[in-house]
Length: 346
Image 1 (tube, one colour):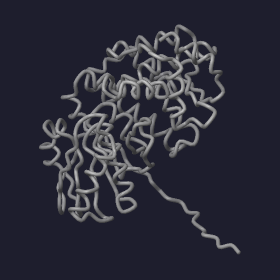
Image 2 (spheres, one colour; image 1 turned 60 degrees about the vertical axis):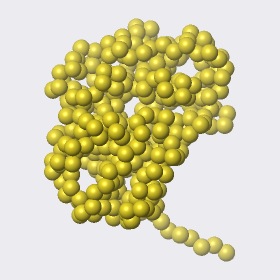
Image 3 (cartoon, one colour; image 1 turned 90 degrees about the horizontal axis):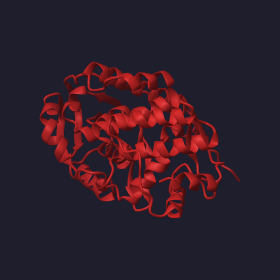
């Protein structure tokens, strides 16, 4: 005996990414702005001059990657239940990648899914974390191992927020821009080698190029079954670094920067990238004071942690490797000895 449930349908999750000054908007529903004390202190007043709602609440979470956990998610959910949010209610993520990921995840599970908007305030979140619908939180096993794909209704990128961004945070965002240029756009990489990202007009154009690059990839592979995994270049190594340092020593983009250098060495060993090309990437990262070296205490332990990566399976580790500059290879067929040899250099 068999009963079929025909659920085949086309769902349009398209949305707009606006790179400009936020315009005044009123929401005829309950809205909660999720933020942290640092962002709230600098910019909440500005946002509240632009956003109004039938009922508007502010939920403030502690600042830092170490708070990207179940306790913070519970804080969001409890507030939503206390204020009787429903399926027509809206969340607004107002902060960096940590706030964006947690807000999106809370939106994806509250009453089985409500809408949310991304208003990213760091360079990293503007060019990468806010785009593509990846949401989640960390646990003791690793980064973003719990989460969901839940696309925002829109992304509002206001360059004003970058005027107060610390240099380290700015550099962390540059790392994600470099990541996309190396794997998908040689012309963009060459532009970055000479560009002055401290110039506001150049920076705005760069943000647009980076967002467009990621948007093109996400449009082809929304849920990371193939091509989108290439956007994790540097992350397989970087996530291990973050895990080993308990998310306290490096910003995410800084760990990715080191991870890209490690991945580049593997590409050089495999003949996918020349030493000169790897050096060009390293110099571009160092131009923005990004770290390019990490001292590994236990190489085998570092290697074993790769198996916790979401792209890996029980017996194969998936690596994202650049092919020259502007190309990328996704593979789970790299010999363990080669990777251990690369790690030995660190």
